[in-house]
Length: 458
Ligand code: SF4
Image (cartoon, rainbow, N blue to C red; front, side, top):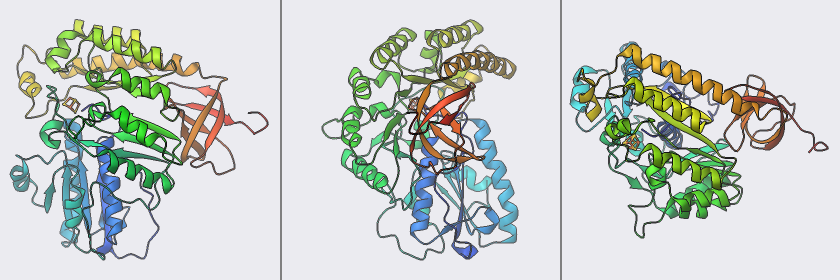
C-alpha cells in the first residue's frame, strides 16, 4: 500500500477525452476509478485500449453500454464507494438491459469472486487488477479487432503532460495491514527494454514528465535476469529525447540504496522529490506492521538522502491507530514528523482489511484502537503537518521557481515545481507542457501562487 491512497479517491483519469458526440451508446464506455496511482494508470491504459478498438468515452454511465468500475480495497471506505456506485448503476441496467458492467481491480481477489457474484447480480464480469486486456476483451461491440494483448504496452495518441508508467506489478512484502499482495500477487517487473520503449513512445507523442510507478518501485528488477536496478533503468530512460522530468514512486525504505540516491542526485532530469512511507514513528509499531526497518534506520536514510540531495522534498505515508499502537507510540510518530519535517504526509486512520494479519489483531480488544481515538490521532497529526507545510512553503515567498505546466484549472495555469509543489499563475499565453519561471507571491500549506516572469526578468 505504499502508494498514495489517501487523497486520490475517485481520481480522474489523465486521458484527454476526444469529442465524438455522434458516437452511439453501443460504442461508448464509462470508466470510474477509485484508488491509487496504479489504478489511475491502469484506467488510462484501459481507456486508450478501448479507444483503440473503436470505443468513445461517455461522461455519464447512462450514455455508455460498457461500464467499468476500477476498484480499490485498501480502505473500507473505498469499497463502500464502489458498492454505492454499483447500487446506482442497477437503475441503469434495469432501464437498459444491454448495459454490461465490469467490476475490476483490487476488490476482485482470487477467493472472493463467488461471494461477489451472489451479492452483486447486476455485475456481469469480475476481473483482477491490471488485467487490461481481459477487460477490453469483454467489450461487447468493438469495431476493430485487438491483434495483440493490450498490456503491458499501449500507444497514446495524445498523452497528457505528465504520465505514470507502471514498471512493476504486485508486491512480495507482507505488511500486516495491507491487502495489496493478496489482490495484486507477487512482484513482476517489466523488462528494461519494454519500459524504455514505452517511455520513448509516450514522450515522442508529447509527454514531458514520466513517473515510473511500482508498489515498491525501488525493488524493480530484482526478479529479472541479471538483476538490473532502478538506478540502471533511470540511467537508461533519463536521456529519452524530449523528456524534461523523471520521477518514481512509491519507494520502500528497506530497498532504497546509496546508488539509487546518488543517481537521483547526479542526473538533472531526476526531480528532487521522494515519497518514502514511514507508516509509524515507533519501532514496536513498525514491528507489528512488519515493515522491515527501524526508526533509526529510517532516520539514517533520510540523513543520507538530504546530504546527497539538499533541496529534496520528502513526502511520507502514516497509518494512525494500527492495532497495538498506544498513545505513547503515536506521540513518537508526531515527534518524528516534527523532527524530519516532511513536505507532505498522507495520513490514514487504520482500516481493517479481511485476510490481513492486522484484521485479526483489530478483533483483539487488547490491541484495537477505538474509531474516536484513530480520528483524534489523525486530527492531531494533520495539525502538526499543516504547520510544518506552512513553514516549508513560506520559504518560497519572493523566490523564483521553475514550473512544468500541466494545464488550466479555474482560469489559472496549474503546474508543479521539481519538488512537486503545486503552483498556480495567470497568463494569457498557452503554457501547457512548457517550463515557466514563476515568481512566488503567495504561499499556503497546499500550494503556491505567483506571476510568470517575462524573458527580460529571467
Ligand atoms: S505489502 Fe507493504 S510494501 Fe507491499 S504494497 Fe502493501 S504496504 Fe506496500
